[in-house]
Length: 477
Image (tube, rainbow, N blue to C red; front, side):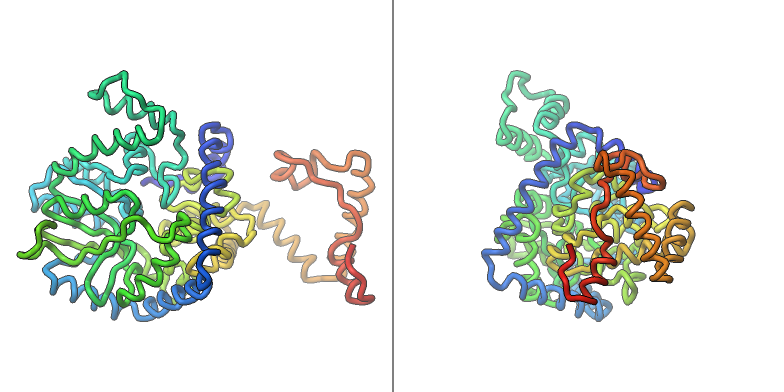
């Protein structure tokens, strides 16, 4: 996927004026948040599980080389092959080589954000392969030639009417008089079309939510069962995933799974939790003849031990996205690359550079909701501040921003001057704006007043109230 993260502000303007998108985003605001809260409330040990999940991943990341080598050894013992890829290009090329060795014509795919990260579909199609997304949301956006707008609900930006129009266009061999008014009718039609493709596939590609070092297994969680058909029916199964997905053993994987579905969709557990361990054995009734795992680095090893190491705990549940007011307003495509929302605002600059994605860490109100709901307790606001600091240090932020921060820093280092200046500004604004109660325009505040009124200040400044409380024990008013 070609990045447009540098054009974030233009993307935002487009998103805010897209009526269909704004209608579709209501599903995120109304659905995921309530379901997550109810699921967490039903599990008394939920907070303790979050601590356990965090500790498991921290331990694994501290010994990542050991667990990856143990995982590779187990995969090999089971008859599979592990391929190490330092870059997206290496991963794509290895997958094409495997497909060509299998004389593949049709490739089915389960949902995989890593595949999106390395732009796998386009590369396979350039190699002459027919690529079919089997997750319903991914299938919809494949028809629309769009990237996903959410990591667990890739087509959340699309309305039912738009899906119906796409199906009528691309399923032209089906009776034109058929009814597609209800969601179940759309699902049944997709199932009918995709079932034929499963049996045509030579290679199936899935991602992995977890890799288990103890057994050499890969684990995927789905709600449609498409991942199972994708990896069982073709003669070759390829797992494409990144190096931080490994966990020590099955008990550790199960502990994290208990917070994954609850945080993502509000379910106790996803409908399907599927473990794959190597190719088909002689006594197996079904399964692939060959099993390959592509382990992608793509910049992740450089995050270990640094300011952004905590981001490697992410299990792609989407909770931070579901609770983010910025995402609620603009959707996922505005972020301009694979990963949207708060997790994308931290991860994307690591993977494609802050020069390209520097706008994203600034796309936050710092309300802290993302960190408060993250099942892995990732300090997302802190890491966004780290990126803002680096952006400022490298002089990548606009001059007006740098000058404004420098001016603020001048006053902030002189508390008495800061208190006097803010007090004078408050008094002046209160006097000038008393009549209307708000300002439609303010110098240096166009980013606010272009879209909303600025209320007239009332009472004392926060610093003045706090100082009074400290001196006299009075409550700030």
